[in-house]
Amino acid sequence: MTAPIIAAKGLRKRFGAVVAANDVNVDIMPGTISGLIGTNGAGKTTFINMITGYLQPDEGSILLEGGEIVGLTPRDVTRRGVARSFQIPQLFNSLTAVENLTLAEAALRSRGFAGFAMLPDSALEKSARATLERFGLERFGDSLAGTMPEGIRKLLDIAVAMVARPRVLFLDEPTSGVSSEEKFPIMDRVIAATRADNMSMLFVEHDMEIVRRYSDRVLAFFEGRVLIDDKPDVVMNDTQVRTLIIGEEKAHG
Amino acid sequence: MNRTFTFLPPLLGGAALIALIAWFLPSWNFVLAIGLAKGLPVLGLVLLMRGGLVSFGQGLYYALGGYTVGLASQYFGLKDAAALLVISAIGSALVAFVVGLLLSRYRDIFFAMLTLALSMLLYGILVKSTELGGTDGFNVHGITLFGIPLTGADRMNGLLLLIAVCVLGAINLGLFGATAFGRLLAGVRDNEIRVEYLGASADRAVLIAYVLAAVMAALGGAMSGIIVGHIDPEMAFWATSGEFVVIAILAGTGGVLAPFVAAVVLEVVRSFAYQYAPNTWQLVLGLIILALILFLPQGLSGLVRRGPRAVNAGEKS
Ligand SMILES: Nc1ncnc2c1ncn2[C@@H]1O[C@H](COP(=O)(O)OP(=O)(O)O)[C@@H](O)[C@H]1O
Ligand SMILES: [Mg+2]
Image (cartoon, rainbow over all chains, first blue to last red; front, side):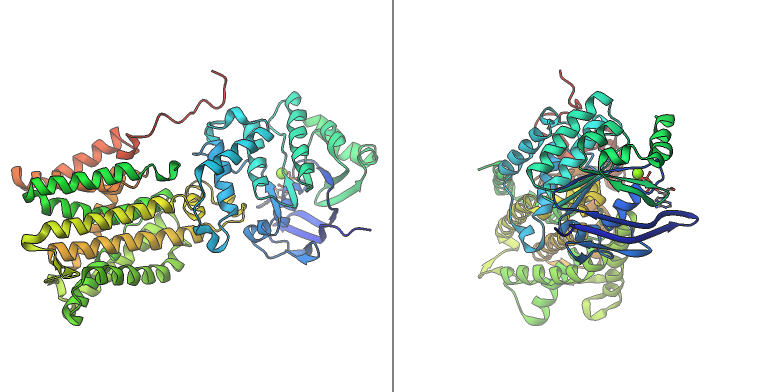
């Protein structure tokens, strides 16, 4: 049996009266794609925030390939090979898409004294444009990130995160704010890119068709707990999931 | 080679132009020199502004450079400009590194106010210390470069040295802009969360920019001391730092030549104002700032942007 690349154990997080994580246990196996579902407020973003060092859990441990990462800053967690995209894209809004990717590459190469080495524009721009092509964003290369449609911003946010060449990638609602026809091509691009780099990936998603199609396994969160963690078909047919999550999503979708 | 070096031809052209003007119009030598000396701290300030930071205290390093020249020549008999410039640069870099370890954790108004406070601290010390000349400061005499005189009848030599320092400073910062740290600054200004989530340190980028800016300011102050032949606490006064900020805004963050153009233009305007309409300089300055904000929010460098940036949001056109 292979060891998990991420092993979260007994994570707890309270915000005042709200319990956003209530004994969360999740293992992520190398090279797998996990879908994470749950109604708004279930604790999905909080879970990603704890793993990537943005929030410190009140209790629990997170092992990355066996090493504890609780207490590390987002920067250190990223350097160890964990990257993420955001529910609200975090881009450099006054820069173009190409410049966003160029800056991401510069960030990757700014670790230690190597940051004083000059990076030639031509090479950076070439690799930025290649990345854009990989995500089908080539015609947005010279558009300002701050003025792009939301769906494009989401995809660029993912592309920027992947510049760091992570081993584990967390995507917080990669297809929200996008019409249903657009969701599949976006996920096709993202999945192809993660598979090509042999990453482990976890994505938060509300569209059950997307979850079923692209996940190797599905985690369902409810009120800060993992309700069930199993194969997509098993989770989708689970009675609790159907009433507490899928039913709710339909009612609000 | 590539875009990294596009700043070189206009920079060298500008340097040659200034030298020519001073050669044919020797009476303008002094005004040009003051302008260029102020351009150095502005060059550093513009670097910080690329990271979204405004320092209201670059006078701290301007004075540090000037006083290094003054004290080293007065008390240690060191009269060689090259040695004095190197000592000014190293000394201010060390001070800026220590101070920067604290400052680089702050942003926005907090950063601006802390830089202001520190420069006023130095101002206070200089004014109170009679050993350092008190409010009058003191004169700097007979600085030479490898034996070549730089002042008086030979002030053209001084200007040429200053031009060389400015060109080297501009090249240095131009190249820094192409390094990974230099490129990070725009990210620090736009979105620090993303910078940290790319595994980079925003504080580190700010610290490096702060040290570089300090060295530029110190070189400007040192050259000012050598050429003017006098240093005083005014160099560290908030009004001096404020003038650097005004020139930096006039210059914009677009390039390494604009700070010098802006500084020289402003100095020339100031000397005209003094000559033809005494006591109106503040008024003129006010009008310039007003016009700038209304008509040229990107500064001078906004004028020479190669073509408009595409903002079509990717729609097919
Ligand atoms: N920084 C915070 N401060 C206070 N409450 C928070 C914070 N972050 C999340 N919460 C609360 O924790 C719960 C889980 O939020 P979140 O993880 O964002 O849910 P999800 O992403 O599943 O929609 C919500 O009730 C939310 O209001
Ligand atoms: Mg969320």
